[in-house]
Image 1 (spheres, helix red, strand yellow):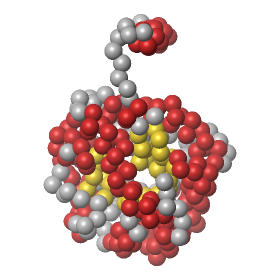
Image 2 (image 1 turned 180 degrees about the vertical axis):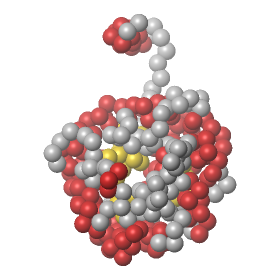
Image 3 (image 1 turned 90 degrees about the vertical axis):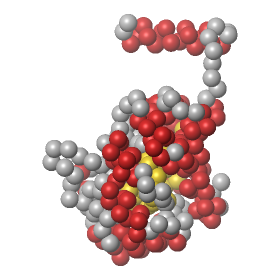
Image 4 (image 1 turned 90 degrees about the horizontal axis):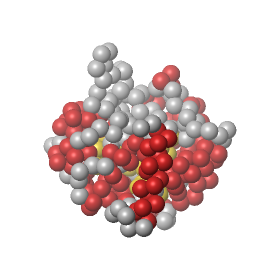
Length: 293
């Protein structure tokens, strides 16, 4: 069967479902909040045009709210941005968030190699602005002490703290690229602060085990293939209340990342936690403080 035949058959099955021919399931209760979205890589000349396109895609698959990271472009050449580049990226996200209204929130992009500027940028975008979280990428490994002032400032204002992580084979991680083990080291220095371990470390079997005993670290599942057993293992080892859905769109699709959760052999209650309720809980204190619905 080729793709067209498969889609035609799927359309017929959907029609039968409406007539009682096959059982249906109401997925309306599984609306998702996406922890990891980018305006980079999508169509549009401005942040507003790009977030409009993202929201059209989100509406097709039941994604209710987006957390936007970085700016108009994401490039390996820009792994340790200058203060000017950081401000430019954050300005793009600010424009997108303001245009999207209650459909999107922003995470301020910071570079610990420019610590004083990063703290000032946090104040501009989070303390005095609409952003609700911190995005840390690959400029400096998060086990470094330069992260401590950022974590303390974010915790003071109830901001979500997201750290990209990966576990790479071959040539290994870049010099500033964190692993889940770095997140664990940072979390142990801040036991009262909850941290998001991005991408489950890429190598999710190792990433899940790395953070298992560090209860203030949550696992974000964005960005890898929708491999069978991934989410099931995470729920078994960590509990559903420590897992957060994200897509990494446009680097990945909404659909492939939602499939990890919606297709997982876990209870419906666990799916609701992962897709929406855990992130809502993390964001609730700062959103309430800012008066965001």
